[in-house]
Length: 253
Length: 265
Image (cartoon, rainbow over all chains, first blue to last red; front, side):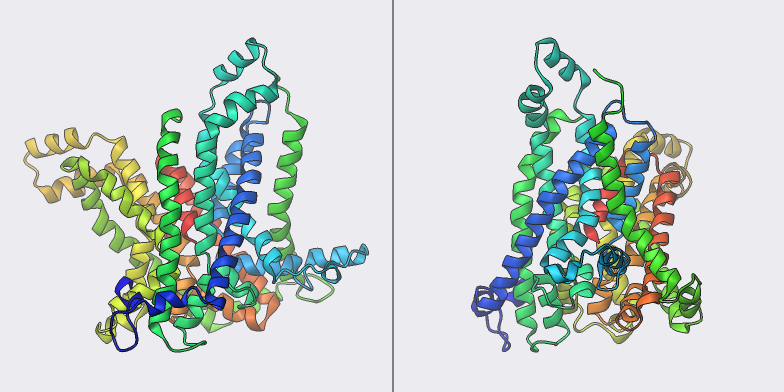
């Protein structure tokens, strides 16, 4: 694939295919993909962190934790086509929740909302992004020792000061690392977007799929160049992830 | 420190639960109602009668079993050998297990189609050949993480030496000493692989094979209510696989493996 990305139809080596990536339609696809992945990684990261902390902190009933992690395992793995249909049945034009809101006088689709748009896709992606965040951040939250909190409050720190100076700085590498993982997860997702938008939102994986099945034009090298671009983005993500991972390892045992 | 449940924590949990339960409840309602005024199982029986449903479901299940078998045969001895003789290679294995993350399925299928362009018909034109080759790559991280956790939990050196000093050869050691000790880890990897393969759409669709997720998508383009019913079935499969995982593998690698597998879908 790497070799193919730098070849043309005649098999000569060239940068032409890779240069095509910077043209309007393709550049736009990378932009949309990156925006969608960044947005869902950030929101998924924040909500996942809050949920995981709410479940793990002292005082929350004991049964919540195993229930949440097991469910997260299921939901994080429940991607693809069935997830798209589940949301169509919920928030699609005749979905259960859409009809409920309609009868309550709130017409979502008249207010510019559509499940089949960028916003809709983000709502659906969060369904597997949040559980993934819960799964990967839970060990880090467990690593926050209660001694640190007690020490801080013995020294007169408020709950805000504890988080500002102890909790968040310790968690930050794990949070950022997990968000990068979420970014990659959203960036490479194909099935959900495919069956939900049928190409209305211009995403890189969908574009590769279209080139590959010959819907656009029959040029295998363009597909390989697009795929190469994806790998480059993922490698950048990993390059950010590894040093954070090392920092995290210092605190989480 | 307060030991009472904090109100804001409970509010967040309820809100989160609503976000995750409502789509499932809505899908279930949608599939049972089928546009009629009363509930029925019509949507479910409509696909149960469809021979395509049985064919594609069976195909996906077969592919999952084949992937599991090939992965275990390939990777149990590999991970064993790395733990026993080449512990320095563990970082390399970990890096390799991250590869399917760097190379998403949609990219992997581009590469595989290129690599196997000249492959014989019986391999490239059959899901049992081409797709399984891709699935073994896709499932490598879960198999590896599960096995690695399993091998870390046992004392490979002592077990091997004890077995050898009793006169066992390599094959006997592997089959009768090592394998029973890492059975839970291998099963955990198998359940994760099952969940992944039963839900894998990207590669199957792009390589034009009619597996179960491809069938669900096809139904979804034509019939809304059976599609909702099939989504519920698919969700149930994931649940079964995850519960299986919960019961067999209480090892340390479990959560990591779950998260890893989630990255792949």
